[in-house]
Amino acid sequence: MILLGLESVEREEVLKEMAGFLKKRNRIMKEKDLYEKLTQRERLGSTAIGEGVAIPHCKMKGIKDPVVMLAVSTKGVNFHSLDGKPSHLFFLVASSPDTPSLNLQILAAIAHLVRKANSLLKKILEAKNISEILEIIREEEEKINE
Image 1 (cartoon, rainbow, N blue to C red):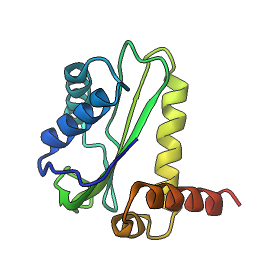
Image 2 (image 1 turned 90 degrees about the vertical axis):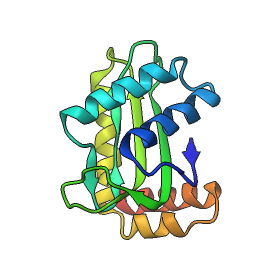
Image 3 (image 1 turned 180 degrees about the vertical axis):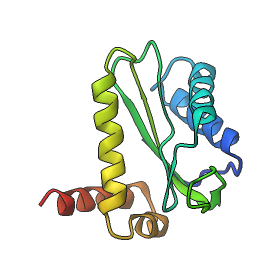
């Protein structure tokens, strides 16, 4: 699930746009519930990890298999990152409260990829389509796991 050309420029609107994207693709049942869970999590502290990346995440009842998506913003969004820089890549993770260890594994894998991959942000922002983005992520994962 990749959303190119994220249009929103405010944190709450980004979360709403991503929830709507997942609803339209039948990946979630309740768009409003997902949005509310994500905003509750953001109130605890920003999920922006720096270097242009945020990982908004939550646990939500009614989700069997974890939902993972990537949204790309060429403009950048103030997601209240610790480094003060705008976020361009948003890896959303929503999972069942019944599988907390799986949720943590997914979050850790994304954070590891972001920290270890060389110029991931730049490469994804320069990608022309979803296929290119998937290939970039695959290549970077392979390099890390060598």
